[in-house]
Length: 88
Image (cartoon, rainbow, N blue to C red; front, side):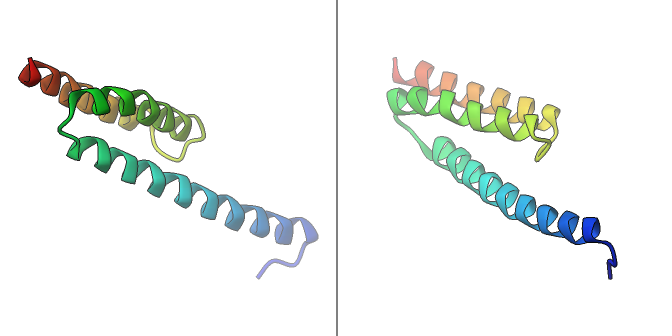
């Protein structure tokens, strides 16, 4: 166990960040799931920028890797575009 004041503070900071990161990660995963299950073109197009923003924020804070965020955004864009092609 830590014996320095700075170590105790670091433990507190780490646990607080971990909880925050878990919350934002889970919220983003739920938003991705909602977008993937959406069949309405207009609803998906409205939801897509919000989900992309969430992914970018997670990548910026190193909760997820930047390439993972890019891959997810690409897959979601293909899903939204496919909905647009089917609806026309």
